[in-house]
Length: 542
Image (cartoon, rainbow, N blue to C red; front, side, top):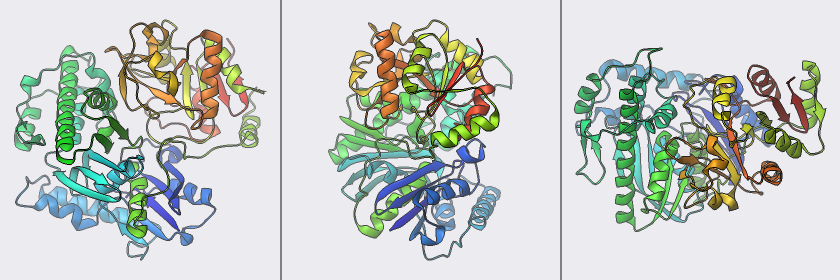
């Protein structure tokens, strides 16, 4: 049985995923193929085509098509309820209806096709996390800007059963609040929230200025009228204006508010269910600083965050949820790695290199050669195996460097990534060695949990540690990514340090590279010193 999961074209991040008899065949984001960041408001045609090709089938052979968004009126009606604040004006409601209908119209199948099932957006988020976590019983939190009829859903699950305890209205959205503060600081909403998170470490929270949250309820609640009044009092930063301490403090304040809210939610769920395991999804779950605070607060013993937690993740979640509905069983796999995208053979890579007429060498051990370059202070593009899903590179499409070298962080930011100098990077290390570098280690394959760096070893990877002393670690296992694991091993043999700086293989405002052609273009348009692609190594003249 084939189940195709899709993000609806109404969404800002679109993707496709394919299950075969409860096993994941492929999962990829549309942006990687179209080269348009997030692929907003677009049907995930190319990612769908990739998934079908990976399975060797056509769309006609798919048994079920699961769309990770409610039907039209299920999106509209909750926002018209007299029991909830009205989020949409009449004009906005009409635009929403038009946009959903437009999305339905661009699908390569009829919405009335008997195979098509529209599924609740946040239930799809939850399914992508809880059902694939490996936890039989756990609490769950799904929060984003807006997802159909609500912006969040909280509860707990056991086996295949989901118990919904709270729904967050669109008017009281935590994701939308963070987006609007991101815009006021001068960043792009629904894209640059990670910048706000990073900037927060440079500021001081001022919780006393937040007057629109009712902390007395079991689940903190935003008063949207007071929130709007608060936001209107703030002066938006204009393009090109300097980031002031006031902006940094505002970022720190909204980060603090979000962390406090999530901690209260997590505590409430533990009290209600008795479970001390937590699963998270939705765009808010990409906030690795907040995730780290939840884990290290001691409220939960186990935590699982789905790495593609934006709306791209509902493609996976919709397929998983539909599988549970049809079979009455959870899928047969745990989502413990993110390598579900396209891969390219050496023959395919070499064909591109020859057509580009570039110089290269074929290596018997690409990991050893790359480790030597890193030891010598070089910045290396790393293009290997299947592409990862989610916004963080995990050793499939990465840019690597030695994080102990003074000034390497500024060099990667300025000459390679073409982005702000204060932006942080992340460290990759062997999972079993995490305790050598960070305090209170925990399973962290997705670079989505922040840990405090050990003060006695921070000098070994200082460029991958943020200004607040935290690091969003990727713990690499030999089973999930054996080649990347061996690279770290080779680097440790040469330097005595088993940690590498890892950032996404892209430049500012572009998606991660997908194909060898994408990798070559980005390599030659940036300050990388070398490119390790398959068994081939390219180097620029010193």
